Every structure is written in structure tokens, then in C-alpha cells.
Length: 136
Image (cartoon, rainbow, N blue to C red; front, side, top):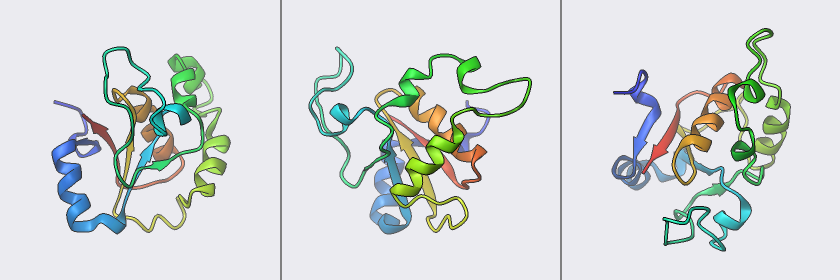
């Protein structure tokens, strides 16, 4: 059981809330552009490429996959996430603004969940509320 179960979303739960509240949910795909457009899955064991209908490409081209360890993602001495300005700028370009936060749920997705988890941590650090990770 996760420490914060409210941050974990299953595919079934996502389908339910998209059907009920589609316009107020933001599904953010943090994979590479080639994964997003269906050119590759990014994983040898995943056979079906593409994206979930309505998913928004986050424009960072899979950077969360290149932030490979906790030290690079978070500085324990200064309590600063070093790339946060970069993400804030990219996310503003796709209409995500932590000051406005006009959606009921912000759901991050990737291929297996670890990149989306890192994106969710950054989103909360930047002030977003109701953040979740899609766990397929």
C-alpha cells in the first residue's frame, strides 16, 4: 500500500473520471516525443505503441528518464529541485499553471510509472494540487 494512496491512479479509475469529468482532468504524458507519437514504446517488452486519448505531451522529451538518481533530482542540503524552473516553463506552455490550477486532477503518465512519479514530485514542489500518477 502506498504511503499516499490518493496519488496513485489505476487505468480503471482514470477511465471512470475521464468519462465523468473529462474536461477538468489533465493527463500529462512525460515520455519522449517518439513514445508519445507512437514511433516506439520505449520498452522491449511493451508491444503496443501510442498514447491514451486526450493525453497531453509535456514537451520535456522524456527528461525525467534522464534524471537518473535522487541526487540529480533533489538536493538534500538545500531542499531545492534543480530543474524546477525548466519544468515550470514547459508546463506553462501547455497550459499548466500552479497559480491557476483550474483542473480537478493532474495525472502524470509514462511507460512504467517511475518517470511519472518524478514528474508528480516536481509538480507538487511547484505548488500543483490533486496530483496523481497513472499506474497501469
